[in-house]
Image (cartoon, rainbow, N blue to C red; front, top):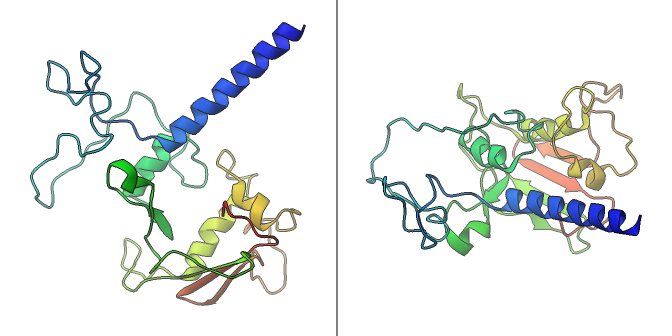
Length: 218
């Protein structure tokens, strides 16, 4: 009985480690090499770790063209609220935007946080409970309509609609609404219709997150 429990826990731990590795690692493009050098295979494909510290098979510096993405499996969902697989999160950067993101450079620089929709990383209050972002100028939807702080807030509030958009990570719910008081944008019956109170949008350029308690992971 003890052996079975230990084995089960070990399998769970290994599974959890695999998930973390999948979320934190971007695999190199192309097939594996014929040896451990990562130098590439006989057919010219990049080695399995060729993109760890540099751009693999870099093309000429020209704008335009067609980017084709192929995978041996489909994503769990292409909706950024519902997707959970690491490769989906990587791919979604082609068509979605965030307040901040990771640099697209290979190596250690890829782990650094850099502004995306926001002008800078968050301004954090001394007590660690308030995060303020300012949207930069010129960011628009595909049709040219400006992206506002209310758009960003709504995109985040969709996470609360688990009865409609289940499957994705729910960490924001646990941090911003630990008591589960907000019912999501589709069930909001409040008179003011201000949505999740933990997120404030005083104007179209500013979005403020009010955490019930400090959380450095945020």
